[in-house]
Length: 506
Image 1 (cartoon, rainbow, N blue to C red):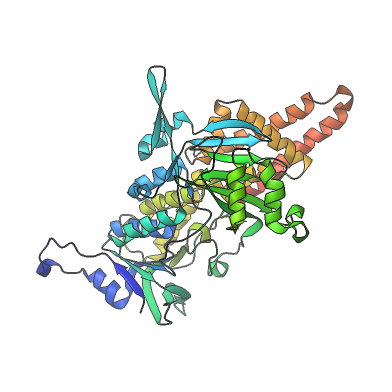
Image 2 (image 1 turned 120 degrees about the vertical axis):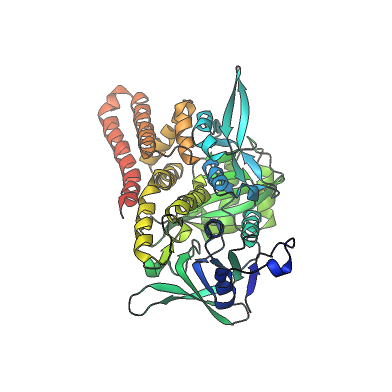
């Protein structure tokens, strides 16, 4: 039998007064609901709670209710905290030994630049969402800066699932979905087939089926023409009592190789994520594999204060990996079904934007699929119209985060002279301070939701990179330097425009 977790009725009313609603009876006895959600992860669980609080009956299916143990999904940007608050789930960040995140420290060949989250954001999205803020005294005025949170992924997921189990309109069931049930004539998705750990088979029916089964979705290829593209992996270590250059900040280490990301996930624990592109020569078997690469190439490039804890973690041997994937978004036109979360759209996790995208997608769906706009989730035509609106409305935030993640990774993992010039231009741009850091980090944080701002800052970096090349070149090399400058600008276009076009496709 499947493990079914429903909310327990409050003991305060008399037992005779507790009468389950017809929708609850159908869900518990006949496996019928308004919505079936496959995957009790970040998006699936928060969407289930949101729909349930709107009066929808929800069946939430998850193959394992054990606490997940992942090396990504551990840093929530300020825009994600705001989204969580709008959904009424802010308390899920409490009591998980979470760490405040105030911004970033980018270290380029040993030289660092501090990039705090922008103070002016507190008066925009911050007050609307009621996010977490850090107060600073500036003269006589207190400056408010938004904050993110970092934590152990599994602990956060379990808090979200606990919130779902408290909702009367949700049945959380431990079961693996094995197939999609369709109407043979119309192709309408009617529900799913599932199998429990003991091998028993069940079927679940819903007016709308949501597939949110993550980056390794088993059903994606049947409904989306795009396939995820992965050219590198993050290798993760958990450092104990690491001495970070700037506590309460994400640390991005740039050097000869691909970037390294460090951030606290607990009082004593720090996550180290090392990007290793496919085919890296120093990670070959002859050179000791990935561990050899980490010990011989990455370890010496880290700040000296971090090296002891990194070496200890490497000696412990608890090294795990996860592919860094890119999957552009797609419109949802399958009758009776939608794909959401990483099953539908992924970007490089370097910028920590995945959970911010997920929570803000749910905020948007809360309004688009509300009972006022879609009284019946079985109204396929209306749901499809709302999902098309969803696809385009999410661009201001999600499009920005998608493009920024891919473009920034291209610069930070620079592997040719033009990209190296753009990487240096990016670091020098950050060193200018002011809007040169407030704009980019506001985009990364999910606070500034204006695609043109991304376009402006990216090409400002490109022009600065060109200026650096021109100003440092002798006069007699000017013709050659001019050609190099054109190559840098062309490379900038090659980096960003494919991702812009992918966002414009329907």
